[in-house]
Image (tube, rainbow, N blue to C red; front, side):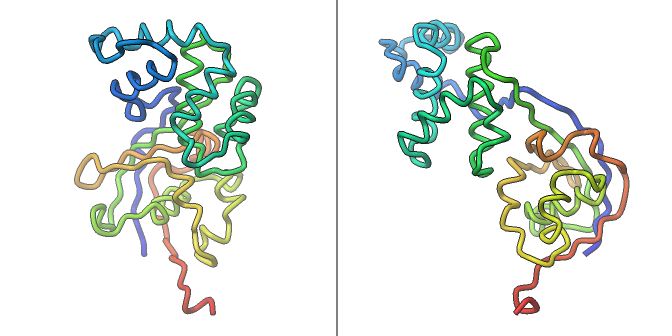
Length: 223
């Protein structure tokens, strides 16, 4: 499969506006022992949430937020460890399980804002690109998307270095779901892709208009 790719824009961001919503902020207010959160006007919620959080030590607050968002994926001990590590490390980039990096990024940035920068800054990359030669609705998967983007990335990019066999189609790209945080169609041939700055930085693109050769893993041929 050959896909023609044009990178329209690559930007680094410190916040994603689609992860949290007002209902979750109200739920967090309850977790931080704030009474009558439901009675607050939407415009007041963030102000009161940050006030409620300020009564807790940063690591304690981190533990509360992590428990609220990730108690179904992490046990109590893991949450306690991450809550303390978050104050000194970029856990959204360094945690051993990349599948959690998206959640950890958004939790970290929320806490960083609440505590005026006490948590390390972590960055995401938003890519806007045009793809021709593939049906974005019926064919585009995270595996194809990563391989298409890799066609424009330099050899030193982390995806190339860590997933060389997956990108080339020699083995199944099971980690594709972990690398691409979100993707959505924004036009007939255009998409917006969000990933960690760890995986793709705007400086990693050596080409912005190119043709990518996509080789998909064939399980039958690998036997």
